[in-house]
Length: 428
Ligand code: CAO
Image 1 (tube, rainbow, N blue to C red):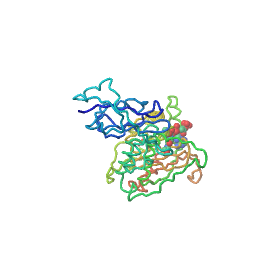
Image 2: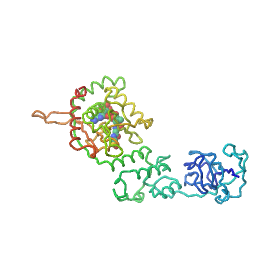
Image 3: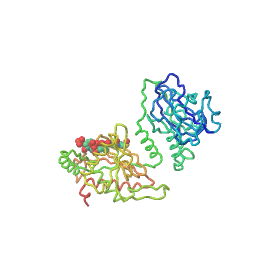
Image 4: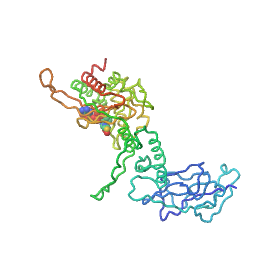
């Protein structure tokens, strides 16, 4: 007859109210004795709690974030036949006979504590770089994964089982040549004990930085980037912007050069549709988009985010200014959703409000180009036999050289500069 067993938090030393940081099992799982059930974390170490029995999990009583002490009920399990004999050094235990349909019947109320688990405490080695529980480290080791390479998406950047699985999937499905085997072979980054040279502080990267960092890294190593530099004479545009800005400032709408750039970029994308395309999964076809959704890089205290403004071709300058203000505020207040960042065709990264003369932005795959904008500067320009002061806007266009040739990129930026120099063209 199947036996119902309770599994409790074992003796964990003097610790009380220890955090559950990871739960590795769910109701319905069939587990073997010694499979890790969950990971607890004290201020000193993380420890895995293994199952003393093999069986099927009927009820799970803890979740991530719960605080537990010795004796807390972890789960109720229907032990496999002979399961009791597989217990991990389980102390003598009373058992309760299971009813014929154990799943449907609740466990008897005053059921005795059946098999407190003798803990197998596996502290995370001090100085270990990646934040991961012993079970996840073991899981990564079994798959041959260097855990320090896996970006963690869990609490405080912790590497979860899903992170390891996603990492493996990404490596396995990466195009040939993008991985180490037969392709890019690079030296491992040296591990330096910085504290040997002076006092240091260690802070985990923000969750956003970890996620965007992994994406930026992939895009940087898998896309052959070239950056085309140009500049646009925005003297007239700026005069108009100031007039318009003064009018709308009363309504709290900020008209910045970026709003004009959004419109001018769309005009250039319509003129050169290859920039509004993406390679399909086979890498053999280009998907041309008949819509114009533009991503805008927003600098937030936690890192870079790229929300997308939809249908920029169908909106006016003021409407775009309003939406830009709203979406960047949303990003900075951490209210942005994944949907807000999807579906972009092309991105703009504007550092013009800060400074700089040029930079090389990283393409936001699967897009094929990104425009970097630096700070405009009054410059003496030789025109009609004399030097005249003109406000020049630096443009830096990074493009995917698999899709776009240098000549096309130069045409694109030249056209963009032309539209910005004479914004009447936006109306044509
Ligand atoms: N040249 C000169 N001045 C510029 C300018 C330019 N190219 N672009 C903006 N400005 C001015 C604006 O007019 C504004 O001036 P006032 O305060 O006098 O009105 C000021 O700079 C600040 O502009 P802003 O940054 O608030 O607004 P924006 O529309 O230009 O940009 C946003 C909005 C969200 C894109 C921006 O705030 C931001 O986050 N930029 C950083 C993007 C980034 O990090 N990119 C790097 C990605 S790669 O790591």
